[in-house]
Length: 71
Image (cartoon, rainbow, N blue to C red; front, side, top):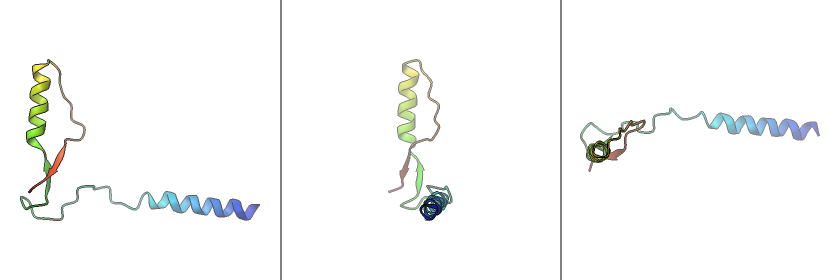
């Protein structure tokens, strides 16, 4: 029984450790600025949503602004 419990603890530790294996940067830059494939804030969408919110008398607080890839 101790063998199974030890094995389970080792497996859970390994699974938890793999969750920390990323650098946390989802949009790491792999291309030069302004080049096709770069991830940038979708300014057109942000402006449209903020304008609509302003018309309705509300305020938008962006936690993570929407992004898009440059064509």
